[in-house]
Image (cartoon, rainbow, N blue to C red):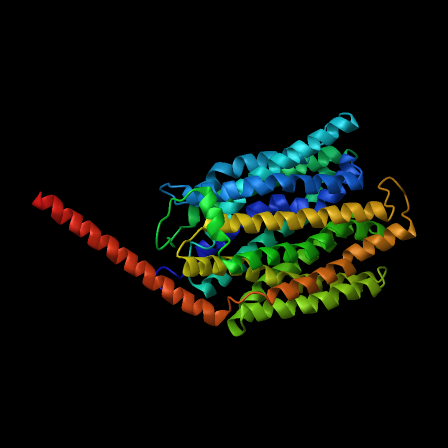
Length: 468
């Protein structure tokens, strides 16, 4: 296959794009519930409503953004230019979201909804093109896994920077004023993230072009993408795969603070060690899929995660060293499926072109990103609603036994059930190693035939002009 091999520099460059995204959006995954309840001052149930409500708007903005990306024509390609255009707005709105105005409660609620919405829109505008980019920089399934492994190692580094620095920077900048501290810390991280996006833009190239270029209307693209039966199933996998990990991430600060009764400094160390474990898991993904089919690795890893996560409910949270070690190991396992998941999205995009003759990358990835955000919203809302249900009180000096039990459930049993459901969904996919080899061979023949036909038509047109 031509142009299928990627240099290490380009793999790192591609990973930098998601690193830039996650050094900002990772703050939402790790801290948004805690920030909104304990710093911004919102009620836990209202946080749940906030996280869910914006997803209704995403149902409109995501496919529109996918269609825009598919139709973008520039000297940089279809997807790369969006990294350049949206990097600054994304950084700006992330800072505004972590800003706490000194307003009345009702006005603060409005501000929270507006800023979270603006951040979500810019996240859509930069992340759909970025994710689509992963399917057009190479057509080799193994290189895709390698590229995604690099991506999640870079994400791990970015998340490690975030987890090591956000809380200490918030203390350093704000002191007793935690609201100011979070705002200033996010300003620094947002600038770093913006530079990462620009580095990705400068180093990555688009290589894979559709065998046949189409200019259909958005309505027709939406109809055609549903003809890809594997795309429908990968949407379900995206929803299920993101929920367990985000529920546990959102519950981690509560678990460390109230159940383990540890300090902010310990929370920084605890979360950072988990991130290191995730980086190791990202590297393991390539090793495991070199030997076994990615679908099998995905399935059995989630079975192991379900058992391991549920076991945390029975561990003594005061056995600090044991909890830290087991949390580190759990995060290694948790991250193994992530590169496989995004590699499967690209494979499903190939499958759609192979089956229908039409490549709709932007629309395809916009659907996945929408379901990913729905998963994040459902998980975040579940944390907010259940904390409220179990009687969590952010202003209390001591939490009730019911609230503590709810936090432990959110950290262990509930994610464990989610991993088990994810394993079941993996069994619905059929884009295994053998089928993908056949698909890539067939698509390469189509592209060659299309190029030869175009060359022939151009030659005939030239001859006719000469005769005329």
